[in-house]
Length: 497
Ligand code: SF4
Image 1: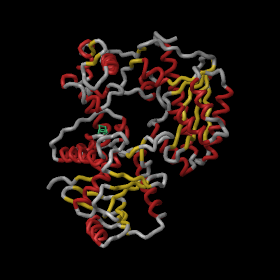
Image 2: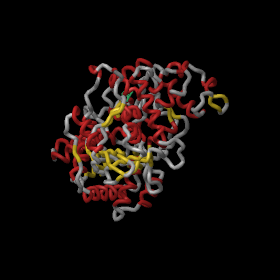
Image 3: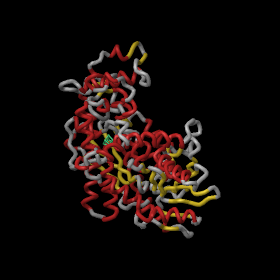
């Protein structure tokens, strides 16, 4: 019998097609432990769903805890009887199997909905309402498909109840964006067809080093595969979709590094469709460096790192679940003497807006006191979050204050302004962790990661355990020191002053 196709398989496909293959055919012994952060995501998802359902102010049919064997019959019967809202049902048709959180009766039949502990749309900001998420749309597509095939729905309407308590309509007959041409229904159809091909072994997939690997339960297995294959995704910031654009004779880092650049870029034109000349040149340089016996990063153009007697190495920690920025950490160094540098931290002692505001106000005052200091940070995240905080707490500082501050020459985003745009590194990624580790820096924590710190903060809020608070501070301090290690290494390289 053909393998049933579920919504979670479609969801996995949108993250990584190879995960669909491994979940179906991989050796379970090769799986890693589920990461504590992923467990936290599940836990929070379930808790949010429970809270949402408990807060409903009208009657509904709850099938969540009914055994799977009876659930489908009961769901069907409830729809035939015209139940207004069904929670936790199960539907199937042919090889499609779905468990939508919600089935709601409308004038045009039943429409499916999911309860999501994330925002219902992506890319929302002051100028845009955002757009439906592809991974939500394909799941809803599967439910809607089943309902239509069962003759229980006549439209492609569906919806999401999101973390902000809003109902986001997902009209699958429409494209995800105003200018888009492809309806979400067609996107669903393509994903479904691919997943069916994978399930039937008609489509081979391969692993590739992408950001999602860090939290995936196949991460160790795939890492071994990727390194053994010398796969192109080992080149930093060369993702899976770019890899597919390379011709078959350029499928390894060694092959790319062994190719003459003039065969790839003629004048200012790339010879590989879909990859621009500058980008191809960059990938080629990274491949060449990666294959050197003792690779050392280098600058592609002159970089001036501002000089000052006082340097601040800055890093923040946030809790995306609570929408809080709870820690602003600085390593302060004077006269380039690392032996006497100090760690200065502003911590929100409770996960509440008042304490977030106070920590922000203290960090802001501290930066104001260090007007002559050069401030180094890694990526635009610090700037983005401080702007958000200014919007939230205009009594502390205004958004204009933030814009002006981060535009000062003494504020340096090492990732955007230096590492990514003006350097070549031989590493698999350009994350601060990767670069500082390459430079010989070691975090004191045995498992340092941004997602780890989010999970520790959650534990600290739940338990108040001071050891966890110390772990978070130590981790943040090491992030700041890693930034300092990077700055010192950049100064040691030939070109910049
Ligand atoms: S580890 Fe990466 S490549 Fe492997 S299945 Fe997971 S996401 Fe895909």
